[in-house]
Length: 136
Image 1 (tube, rainbow, N blue to C red):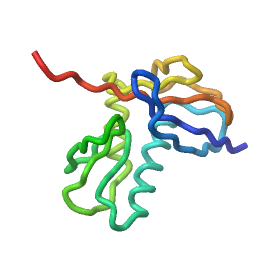
Image 2: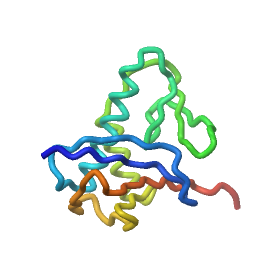
Image 3: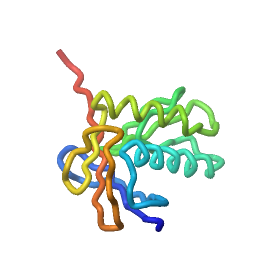
Image 4: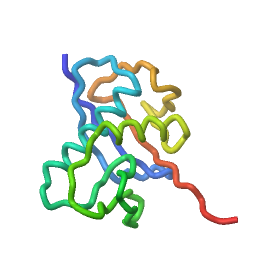
């Protein structure tokens, strides 16, 4: 039975700056599948907007620069193009593996890409992107 889950992007202080519904064909998914569906949906949403050059997503596309917009990560593409979700997914998996962001499922941190989750519409899923500090 399909399950619609709302994912949130949060700051490290717990502030929510984005919510996105995702649909899964089963209530049993892995963390990898969660990331894949999120990245796929972000690319599809961006590609449907023909004149858009600002991408709002989990990871920065190639040939894009980060735009400062409060806590929400945005990336400006140098020219309008479609975004291929597969390289974005590979970057997201690498970022998760190297602590570029973490995922909380009902307030518990996901530990591996192969971790199996049992989700329902009330499951709370939060992506928290970590920002590298600059300085000496």
